[in-house]
Image 1 (tube, rainbow, N blue to C red):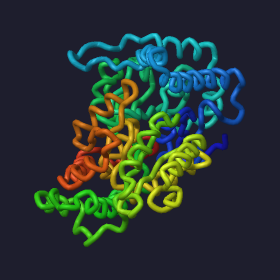
Image 2 (image 1 turned 90 degrees about the vertical axis):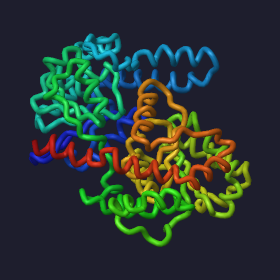
Image 3 (image 1 turned 180 degrees about the vertical axis):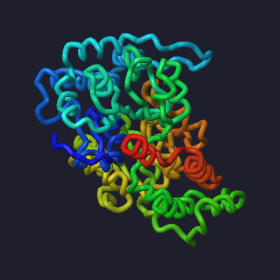
Image 4 (image 1 turned 30 degrees about the horizontal axis):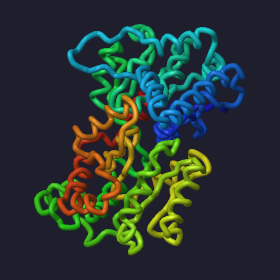
Length: 433
């Protein structure tokens, strides 16, 4: 790990286990020392014992994700696993600071030395430490990291597992994306002074500066595609102009839907069913579908095979694109670039829920686990999420929603209500104090 003398830099620490924590860290890479994000489970010099623990956790998670698809037995196993991530009802307000089994287990490993090497390396130059996963924060706290410790939460609500054994004595500061998270952390015993409601860190390449010139320019064109009958604009055109300025006469791209599946591709068949229903529109170029495979070559090949089976192989690169990157960084770069001409983001309610702040209506695929259920609730409360109907009939309900202005309304609700400046706020608090 090369060291930086700049007081305006930080150690940005993530884990390369799934997309969520890495996607959250990606917009913060500009704060990272030498521009590099450190992966706590996969960095140069990591002791083999530490690597083994991380690898066992990754394999366990992926096994449960795959096994979940097996009827009855797999679903039962996932229910047991999901209990470790359980988020209890918020009301009535009560003390929820008692540690759960999952936290005790993580700390039992940390007390045996898991993560000590990482923290000792970072302590050679104790820059502010910003992590998008709770375990490196626990490690830093336990092994007396000499710099400030910041933990970025990447869901709209959070389980007790994210908070240390003794939160009242902990040095960990939390960056909360929502008021829900901030209030929840207080129930878990985190002192109010250790909680900053920053918003979720969104990619600056989709925002621009604090004037939001990129975001506004993209949204002006998106609104035209989302409101073809001008139902929304006929009522709220003045509000749209107040926020975005004058709209262009026409959009610069066809109606575009981004379908982003989970890392294991378990929901990929939903996207294929949607293409089958929209096959006429896709052939005419009236609708474009971006299928997100991430870094999973198996998911990419599945999409190619199913598209060919529909007789649409010639449309790949035209009305159908497969979003894929050889590395996580290249995938995020391509994904964010494609978002600029995306009109509807179709995804399960993961960390991508916060992308509604970019003026993207979220078409909500089925949630998996407690965090995603709460993300869905948050999206609906903001007004920027619309639960999917049967994908086999999207050629019907998609146009009902478009012609009624429902997607346009969701786009503006997310843009107006959801926090857009999380990346700016985190930089200011962590690196400038």
